[in-house]
Length: 350
Ligand code: NAD
Image 1 (cartoon, protein in one colour):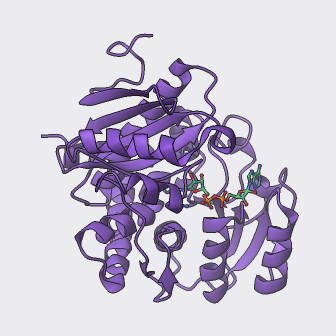
Image 2 (tube, rainbow, N blue to C red):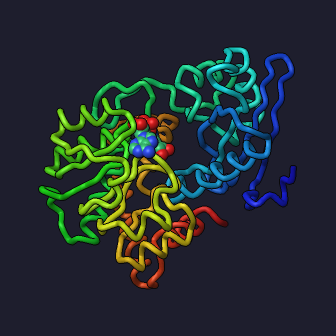
């Protein structure tokens, strides 16, 4: 298995392969860049088909965190960790504690948060062995309500701010009354985004593989239910992908009628070139990792003293970053995703 010559290596500072014989723990901690501060990113537990697959995933995700935190103006670097194993079968308290001990050995260079396959209680077990965990403190959420550490409300709020900014820029409207928005996936983030939009007067179209989520949006928010196949090609103003990655691709882009794409899901572009394809079709793409940074902003404040009004104000700066990206993209006639990457690099490279 190649590491330094791996396609996704991309100047990682440190990669730690962790093995604990007693508990069977096998994990990888990847630290991409710490120029702005310690690396913060989720600890994922997944039943990877091979060690190579786990390495590729952790390297890709870790780099993504460097870009996200830099664009969110946080004093954080980028890192991620993966535990190799099926969370439903292999997760034990002893294994999580062993992971906590490995986190401690990074010497505060990497801080782990919850991710797919790990939960707040899991991170609390790791936290018995190390201070290098985040997103576990009960606090007042950005909506002023008690929060157990789940960053989704903050992510949804940031996505809403980003969506409004993109609509103002592209469609020249500040009033969202009657704005037609199609939301793909009404889970933790998508449903809360739908609530913000409903409150602002938008007309919602929703789909999800879980029918009860769709029914709730129809019942509580007056949304119109549509099929998974038609969501991206609806005659609406905005599409908000909040479920899966790679939904903007060769098949879907030619069918899109909306003029704005603004959603929370990670890695929406199937390939980098789809960024240009959207621009050529006159569709404004609000880069996903700029919009969905609310969660990492929320977790960052947990470490420096959480005050929900400050978190909210910081999340609202997503609007300024987006405007800078949109304006640069227009001045240079280049796609927004490419500009976002460039701006992030300006902020984290020395
Ligand atoms: P979630 O699992 O709670 O919600 C996703 C929803 O999408 C689920 O209801 C699921 O049933 C639905 N879905 C799955 N496949 C679908 C399909 N083919 N068509 C329609 N719906 C489908 O996840 P979430 O926490 O709401 O996160 C949504 C996206 O945002 C993910 O890509 C995630 O990586 C990203 N994100 C989330 C956060 C956060 O704070 N939760 C932060 C950053 C990024």
